[in-house]
Length: 455
Ligand code: ARG
Image (cartoon, protein in one colour):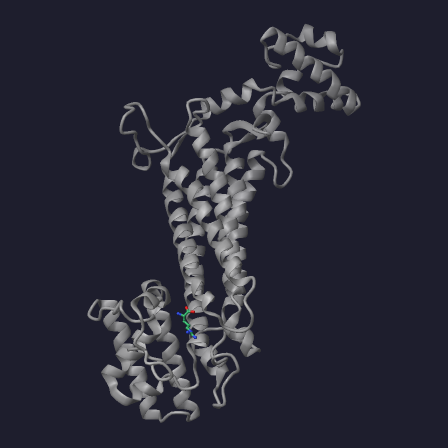
């Protein structure tokens, strides 16, 4: 029998239940549902909409239900329509008539909007915590590789020398912004919809501010239609998580690439690697492939909710029940991804020698060679051209710029001297780029410090 049996009999076809019931996924909001109801009941008692004694009975009853679910003493009945129905039904079973007064001046429309906001705010806290752990791992590993020279790439072609530390700290900066976005999203999530009723507010003299205060919300919604029917805070979280996952996915893609024999810049620890059932030699980076793959789910979750919302007339429509599975999936996926990457990174072994070899091979010091000529008075455009010819000359002879004898340099330009070798040494090239944000060891050190202080 349904909570809303009255106008209809409430004895519904099981196929309706199959599509209508949400307890299969909204049961995970039991804590938020109960906590929100406690705040609502306290307020109802305080403003005199219900008797003080009834309010107290309700609060005690709800606390008992929360405790019993937490401890496993009370099992959530999965045949109920939703978590709201289950909690209210159980309360009335336990405390009798007072329980029937809990839903005064409230609709499941403002109730579910409250629950989901509370759930998301909690999830945001967890996500920020995990993102900080991963950012700290980036900082710690970077600190060990301030002088580990590697090629920086554009178009996946060796471009200019950087360090492993510099590369790692790029991802740390992305995560810092992800954390900022999540913090910002939380501000707009913690706006209280309760008091919006089904759509048109309520005739009871509720104290909405008091409820907001009890629940740690920043304020109350100022339009009842908007309060029950917008999910922009949820879309914002899904957008933030999509961006976060795209960052993790790019990082994962590079790790996959680096694990290949062609690169061999990194080897993952055995406990974070997988094997093949047929090829005995295989050691696979499934972990980063999966983070990369799971990113698609989160982008899909964002699309799911955007699509569900895009043509909904005001105010509440049942389509909006579809928000939860998308949100929960995105949150679970992002949490899991953040959680696995931190220990994967900390236990990975990077191979500086292979990075150095790759760095030495791609003429990535050509820009520095041109800059050397500029320092000797040659206009950059001319220096660029001469260096290009030098590179071609070296490629034809199977040499690197470092190996080319000075006499041959001087056939291209008389500005070249012994000191050119020092100028194009890879570590010199990196160390010269010491502006804030550059790859020079001291600049990266400053970035690590600044990043740590933000954690
Ligand atoms: N399970 C519903 C949801 O998630 C709760 C709100 C139900 N409201 C209603 N008018 N049937 O959106």
